[in-house]
Length: 378
Ligand SMILES: Nc1nc2c(c(=O)[nH]1)N[C@H]1C(S)=C(S)[C@@H](COP(=O)(O)OP(=O)(O)OC[C@H]3O[C@@H](n4cnc5c(N)ncnc54)[C@H](O)[C@@H]3O)O[C@H]1N2
Ligand code: MOO
Figure 1 (spheres, rainbow, N blue to C red):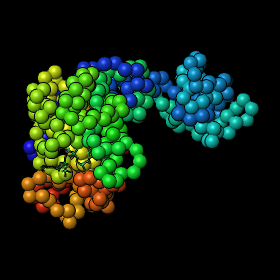
Figure 2 (cartoon, rainbow, N blue to C red):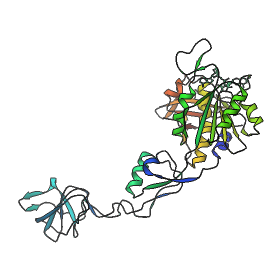
Figure 3 (cartoon, rainbow, N blue to C red):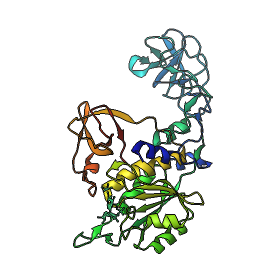
């Protein structure tokens, strides 16, 4: 299947149900409806500077003091001033705030420049109650959490995070120590939890599954709480690769059988009879990363209702060579106005992707047009 179509198939995953989460627990989730301001901002007329709230031109007599907080701000009349703190509600009748730096005080008198309207933040001037500030599909970033609190929200309506189970196959894999003599360090167990969280999913520690079809079938069946089961390795057609046969026996629907991309062509996407998705990632670590960005991340995006815009399109160093039939996914970094290849991005090696600013999507027979960038998890 062409790379772009495969990604679109994955992105068409059905959105999960919506839930309400306290703001503090909603980080990384996706808004299931627009975020609105529940109050005017500022919610009251307030001082923007520490100094004196005044009415009419000076000099002014100082009649009191008001600091930020819920106490009643009182009033100022012409020729009067109230000492005020930034963020405090201005007394009724305030026409300007004169900052300490511009004011000269002598006892109970103060003088300074009178500029009507200056340094007073009027109620609703930043944002009015009822304004839609963020659209549905926005990721709840730390900034959005802060904004939601400012706007008077306590809970956010978001999509439930997809639950992902990661199964790592490969009898040759070791989880510690040096690789060598047939032993390979598992790179995907450490890589995938962070990638899944970044993509809006939740997952526990990856499980190892020995290279036997019956064990893989049992592990997939046991992951019945998951929305998505990721199987690493076992995507190809070797004697130790059981995923396709297991999916066939389970009556799964193969949505993406393989993808015309380099690396990562043996990746797959299937739907089990009960609706759970299975993503098959190639064992080669860089190929697996490419496949995760092609199928897993878009599927999680579809489930969370995340709206990603249209990616970034950029100029790419024309020394990159295209493949005649497949999309190439190349580790790149910024160099002035264009992206240049980082190198070190052979299928088994994550070095280039770890150095890269992004991965470039180079279509078959590319001739120097702008290319799309895929963001890397951080
Ligand atoms: N006859 C064919 N053979 C292969 C094809 C093909 O089209 N026809 N495609 C090749 C490509 S491309 C890839 S990629 C691999 C994908 O194979 P699998 O997904 O079945 O993965 P394995 O065979 O188990 O492993 C491949 C390679 O990666 C290492 N590996 C596996 N898991 C991990 C891990 N978690 N961390 C680090 N490294 C891992 C494994 O030791 C192998 O070296 O198939 C080709 N063959
Ligand atoms: O494409 Mo494999 O996916 O080369 O490593």
